[in-house]
Image (cartoon, rainbow, N blue to C red; front, side, top):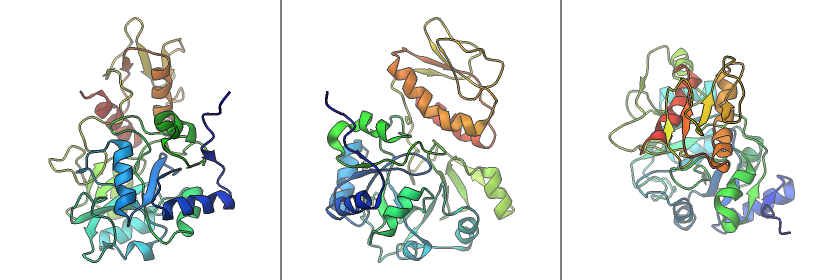
Length: 318
């Protein structure tokens, strides 16, 4: 029987060098990060970036996040400011993406930035992503490794399930620690969260010592995760339900919900961190079991719960 996961590779030095060669040849690979798995390619190459857009079936007006190995390299392509410096010192490397003004002499593909004068940048924390970036001479454009609007992958096998053998090389970094995409904050204007994530508004406000705006439905697309339909398992989702209808999957949260055949508890202990890590895993499990719709209990809309609700609301849009 053919092994459908033969394109998954252990992240040892030999395979990191193979990944490097793939990137240098303008190929696209699967790469783990602490948030979700990404489709990684040379951010300076139009050819590589175009492949990413085509594989994902992603609208060309939706910019990609550019991953850097360190601050020194990031300075080559983006204009930094005092707010960035404060947040960088507090949270980087880590699951936070900054929208900054792009330098006029930046080598980043204009296709990757959707021809905008801004660029979305991040320094990932995941050991495998960092080890790969260390041996590369370019940053990586690396959006989530899924078809546009679909569920993000949180393990290497999810990437194969999504793309089959279209992605020839996937580095296996295990299960993603966080399981939700990075927080995105726009620093080209008054600091504004465009996509909530594990680094919450409360944590950012504590560093900046002032309230910040949350606007995850802006009129203009400045970064990923802002389209109306996103993170979808491909079946209807009904929010804020106390119980499911017959033959409907039910996503619950907390101790009061008993386990049943159609009940999928994000966290029996009421942990938002555990719930975030389980969200996409559970939604994939529900999809594979051929449920026709999903009812979701109310999730506390605070800190990481805000990010979970953002994903569920966008997944429920039509």
